[in-house]
Length: 492
Ligand code: GLN
Image (cartoon, rainbow, N blue to C red; front, side, top):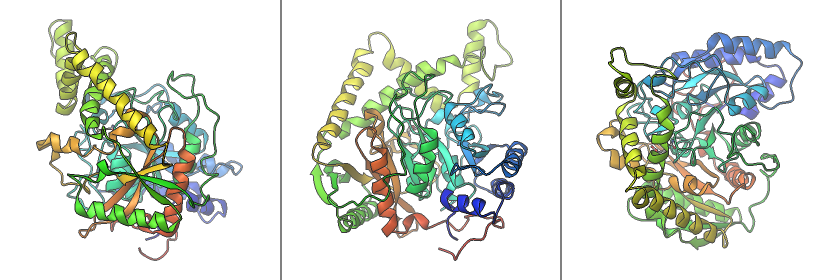
């Protein structure tokens, strides 16, 4: 089956071989037929109506106009359930759109619904959702990754060609790697966080799931930009991320950190990443050894900072202002306690407790303040490395997708984030792109990280690799399970 990309769908819409209504109907059909538990809400009527309006309007120049997409269920969508996969928001109908959603609506995309995720984006397996786990389309017994697992599965299974995600510690890149997709986390502040339900505000960033880097550039062009409603939004000149895709990589200096190839890295993953490095050498790049010597401090720092910020952010869910409220309670304190005990799942409660502890007086300096110092050391390592290289390359995760049931061993799940959390701690843009398959047929992703605000270069480096390799064109057997509405080529 040939992958459906934003580029190919736009062509078909432009030459009228398909209408937006037909395309949207097909996406909805696939979403409803899927057994992966990808969606929390499918907004079928709304989507068809928007597609019809698109088909009747004068043709738009936007490369995304008329194309069905899906949003992770932590982006606020006006008039639609926005649950963050939590019981505490099971009845929360957002009164407004997140800026990212608004921008994508303005670009003409048709949202077909909201994707499943780990509750409040906490997790790496998509098993902490109140709506149940999502399956990996490559192997139904395995996790799709988390926390944006529903969005990753939606693209990997051919339901939509693009879905939004959020990445606080790897939640776009890790599921992209487990599902054979291109997943991009831009520079912190590139996309507005307004209307994205907060997990850890200093780390959260919106991101993209697509098959190709070329498509990611199109999606990011529409999503990013300064927003005065987000005080951490970067007021930088808008760039065309598609403009540099075809630049030659001759002379590119690729930094390879030894710390990313040590203990804990699965052999098959390691050797596929070595192959990718050779491929880049063929494209004219030179390899430079770099050291990210404080990498071993990244997970401890992340798993203090993220829960600390989460404990503060999630204090707003108290049964008074939003969503669920416990039925039987005595006084106000009892109402808060019962609401939060019944409304939040186990992983979320655990993180609130860890975070509140780390922030409490007497412990603040020992934990939170210290973690912030480690964060600076980790960032400095990257800035030093970028003095001798243009991009840092390594595996996205130590292993391919693991089997469901990870919650039994949370520490090993947290270890999965070892290579991804550093980009969030340092605010750097990073992507995961398909780099091959294990003997067992599981996808493996490679991670590319560039200096702040160099998304155009990042996508150029990813795109050039995708011009000479075809890993990203491979699809699982379940791809496009219902009858495809569009003519597709030979099977992959
Ligand atoms: N797995 C990490 C966590 O559980 C990252 C999640 C994310 O990026 N949202 O915190």
